[in-house]
Every structure is written in C-alpha cells, then in structure tokens.
Image 1 (cartoon, rainbow, N blue to C red):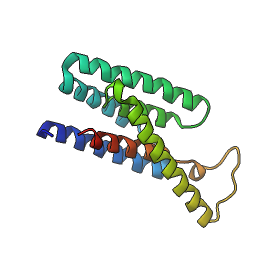
Image 2 (cartoon, rainbow, N blue to C red):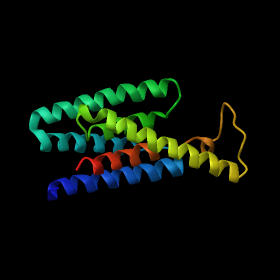
Image 3 (cartoon, rainbow, N blue to C red):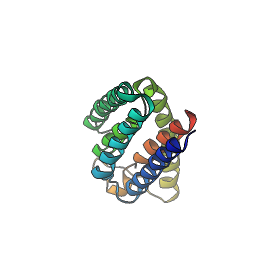
Length: 155
C-alpha cells in the first residue's frame, strides 16, 4: 500500500467513524459529510485507474444510490443511510459492489443482534409504528463498518 492509498484509507475511516458516531447519537448522518465522502471516493477512483476508474466508481455510487432510495422507500433504512451508502460505494469500482454489500449485510446482522440484546437488557421490548428516535436502528454503523472492512480487505 502506497502512502497516498494510506491517506485515502485514513480519510475514509475517519469519515465513516464520524458518520457512525453521528448516527448513533442523533440518528442523522450529515449530508455534507456524505457529499465530501462521495467526492473524495471518486477522486480515489481516478487515482486508482484514471478516467476509467472514475467511471466505474461513479457507476457504483449511482447504483448504490438507487438501492438506497429503494430501501428508503420501503422504510428499511433512513434517507441519510441511503446517501451514506452511495458515498461509501464511490470508493469501490462497481465490480466490488457485491463484496461491499455482503460486508455491510454481515455488519448489519451483527448490529441488529447487538441492538436487540441491548434493548432487551434495558427493558425496551415494545415497538410501535411510530417509535421514538432511540428505538430506530442506526444502520449507518453497519454501513461504516462494512465499508472500512471492505477497503481493508482489498489490499
């Protein structure tokens, strides 16, 4: 791994950590953070493979945004989660989309299990159609962890 790739990786990890903490605390991932993450991810694609790399990374981000919008439409994730997922996808060419999706899904499964156990131990076992924010799963944590793991495993 080159110094430039390490700097890109550090930037990705820091942005993901900020997003995860924000999502855990307030159930909000700032649009500015997702936007900057998207732009730097596309820059990373250009660094990796020139204009072709930029194209494949942009295609992955566009597809991820469509998937995020669909998941938001059926209320499986929040709007910020969908945008954050698209921004994270910009860091990988489209051929790595399945790997990123699988890693996020595994992290999501672990997050759901931990979250359900925590809610059970804290006595919060009831659910309603309009839960308060603390009852909402901060799925940005799974997206961030899955993204960091996918980036780390590609080298």
